[in-house]
Image (cartoon, rainbow, N blue to C red; front, side, top):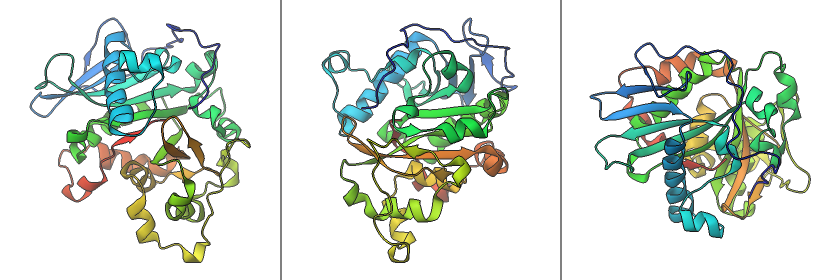
Length: 311
C-alpha cells in the first residue's frame, strides 16, 4: 500500500480560493460554494462534485466493495470492520460521483473519482502518487504560480454500471472540473491486476516502448519500488495483443493521449501493478469536448468502459 503522510490531519480543510464556474445547467449543493450537481438524461442519474462527509462515506463503501470484495486488495482490521476504503487524502480531495436514484437510499453511488489539485496538495502533505513515483518533472512542467496540476485517483465503478454511459458521465464531470480550474496536466497511478510483473510483460513492455513520457515529463518509480517495464524487446511486442491485455481505463487514457512514466510499482496490499499516467491537457483538450459533451453515445466504445483504478 502507498505510504500515508502522517502530517495530514483528519478533517483538514484546504484553501478553496475563488468560486469556480459551474456547468450552466448544474445546481448548487449544500453550503460548499464549489460543489455542484447535474442531472443526466431523465433525472435517474446524477453527477455530483462534493466534499460532503456523507457522500465521501458512500464513495468509500463503493471503493471497498470493488477493491476489497470484488478484486484482490487486503483490508486492514479497521477497514474490514467499517467496510470502507479510506485514507487521510479523502478529507482534502474533491470527489466526483455518479448516482443512480432508482437504487435504495444510501446505496446510490455507482461511480466515483477522487481529485487532488496542486494548491491543495502543497497546503498539506503532497500528492498520493509521490509515495510511488518521483513526480518532480511534473511539478517542474507546470509552474506552481499557475496551479494547473491535478492528480486523479480512486476511480471506481460498480460492476453492473460499467458501461460507456456511466464512464461518460464521470468524465463529463471531470471535463467541467478540468476547465473550470485551469488544469494543464493530470496524472495518477493506474493499476493492472496482479502482483507479478512477469505476467504483465506484454502490456508493460508495450506501454514502455510505445507511450513512454518524454524526459521533461517522465516521472520515475522510486528506486526501492522500481520494476522494469521493458521486459520484452520492442520488436517482439504485438500491439494488438498488448491492448487486449490492458485494463479498459488504461486504454481509455491512451486514447486521450496520455504518456506513461518509467517503472512499474507492485502494490502488495491492493494486489496490483501500477504505472504512472501523465496526461497533458494540450494533447487532449479537443477530444474532451467531443468525447465528454456529446449527447449521443458511441456504442462502439462501450467495451472501453473502465472498472476500477485504485490510485
